[in-house]
Length: 548
Image (cartoon, rainbow, N blue to C red; front, side):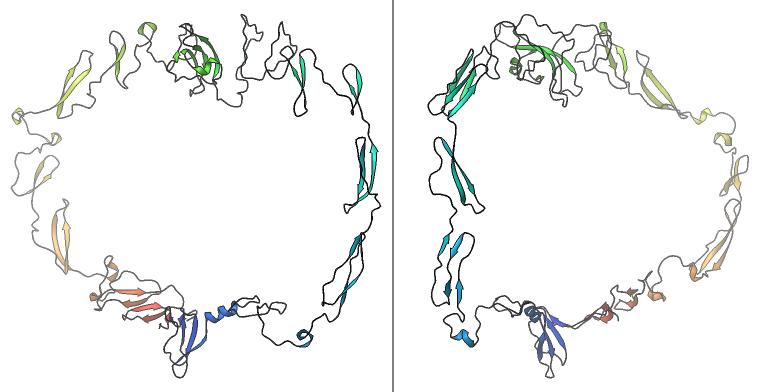
């Protein structure tokens, strides 16, 4: 009975039981209280979770309706403590022992004053001097200098004279400017102008005859640059009649080495209607094509190409057209043509053929010829094939025709065994037939015709070489228990009516008539005991004290 669970009488809804036997315990989950019956069968309250919670809630804080406990220092908090006080605390109007107050420090001096709680007092304090003379420091020709200690006080101060003359120099010449009386003027030169802005900033500007970093620039005459020239911008316009470049290869898309997002190539402008329509033609590598093919195009009207703002060629534009190219192809492959190659050019003059069809020349192109639909196997031992062919020598239709001959066409001999015959012309009426080695002949009967076997006997049968029953005797049935290999022996025949039971189970009959199959009653929970429930059915469970 180790770990057997014995449950007390309990209730989930009733706070207090009305009656308990002597020493009978009961617990209410509704009120959280434990009861026990006295010698008058009256429930007596002896504890429970309700009171344990009250003790657990005890605190040294000032909390209403909670039990008070002292903290680790032996103290607790309360709003009002009702108690009698004793000693000086009941009658005191001043401090029992008066005290003196005073201020001290390196920068403060004050006297002491006594305090006993009978009246307010005022402390008088004075700052010590730093030795700095009072006055005004700094001016148009002097600047003040001073020292500050760690407490932020000025410990010394003085005036220092400054120069009022500014010496200036340029690429050529020097001068001195009196700051109090002179005006410093910034004068521009050839192609350079100067100005003073409202915020007193000096500004120098150059005109279009001087090379500058911003704005438009015009240079008359030839410009020769020794070294590399880097131009940062979006457009370079060369309005010349002749452009000479020494390099044999022109590099495009120099900043595209880490990606593949722009079309690469060149194009030119033209108009076939006097400037009304701006068209473009050129050669480019199409980044939108899966094979990144090069396309020679013409006729394209795209405003993005008018000022070189576009980075891709819009092949979806309705005016886009693939340009003609006259060239001799000496290598590579041809694919993706939109027009068939003519017979005269070595092509087929067609773009597709039907899979599995024969190909013939129809006078203008190579074309597929439809299959005849006669694929199959024809003729066999009982049929002959009737065949029709077309002008190409192909079988255009086939029909199977059954071989049919009349018995009158067999005019001599006896059909032998080898040809599906019997090699016989007569038989004995009612006799079985056998093959005797040369023909199918009559076989004499065995004479065993009768009824054999019953509920308590089995027939013992003897057969001849032909598999026929040649002799029969009845034998009484007698078997061992080990020979019963199927089914389940019922209760009515002395069996259990069941084919298996739960290991370590208690065997019970669960039929009201007592004739039903036996079963095993088991429990996997340690401590369960066999009991009878309210319906009289045996069951495994923990002992339960009931409820109220």
